[in-house]
Image 1: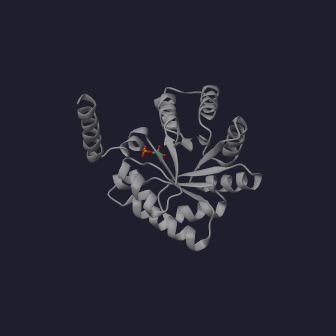
Image 2: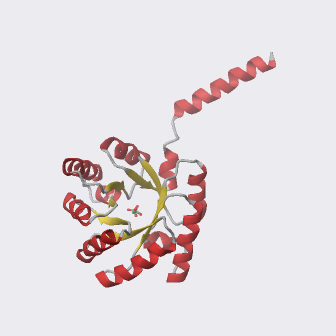
Image 3: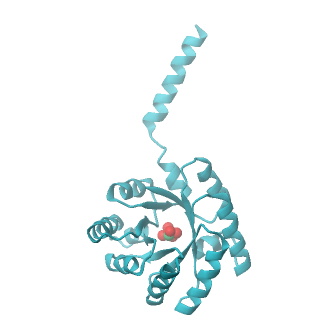
Length: 219
Ligand code: G3P
């Protein structure tokens, strides 16, 4: 399973990258806004900075909601760097745009996916990645992980090649469950990725090892 970080914050991207386990980055307009990045030029420059930091797929989202606009924006984004994957929302024009990009060899990530039906459409249109938002489904007391499981079963049964990118990850548990259920990729905030490190028995065990070593060195 690939690990992407879900942020536009360069120092967080660096920290995850330095762990050596980072395979890519996802961003969205909200994450860009959180960093105070705005305007086409500034946004594009920021994508290039991210591409230069991380050797992996970098999702860059279109703002347009009509087919023509998405095509213009997506082509510009794809030209910024070979690792850019154009992120397109799961709406009618988005499906058309994904098919168009796919035919032209421009890679896409279909975002804002909340149902198995939407995931089937994304795969049929030729999306490289489909992004089910597990945390936002949990937020409305449905089961985000159930969606990962359903999409995984459908894609296996149908032989679709679209990669399942579990998004809106909020906890280390979401990451572990995504791995169990067959997600190809998770994208998570740094906090959730680092949360995988934690276990009290590791801390207790390490403290004991070091204390025992210290006892002998002093004797
Ligand atoms: O990858 C999608 C993600 O950025 C949405 O996460 O936490 O805003 O639901 P969240």
